[in-house]
Length: 139
Image (cartoon, rainbow, N blue to C red):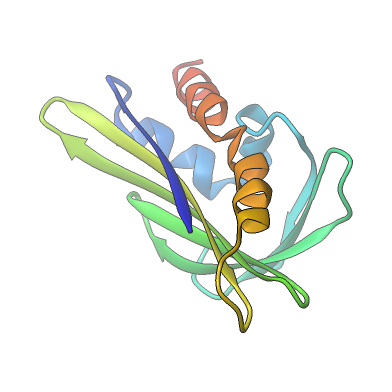
């Protein structure tokens, strides 16, 4: 199950990418982020942890990083499933096309309506975070 939000902006990709690559800049576009750390460089297979408001600390892995274009991080929830957070930048004529997606893959079972409710809550902040990302990059 996957939810996506897409938006075109006049902000160049080169101004947006640093707000992905430098995790300390995530605070400027992730409203509910309380803490984040990365155990190395912003490259594939690097692990880290983050704490969101009202949630316990969660471990994540950068499963894909294409510098200047995209990255995907994965959080595994024991006995439940994997959540992928996908962030993509592309040129679209004279603009930058931003796409943020959240994908949930349950462990050893089919997707249910409860999964839909769960992933909908996680996705709810994504559109506003894209707008905050653009604002931060233009700041």
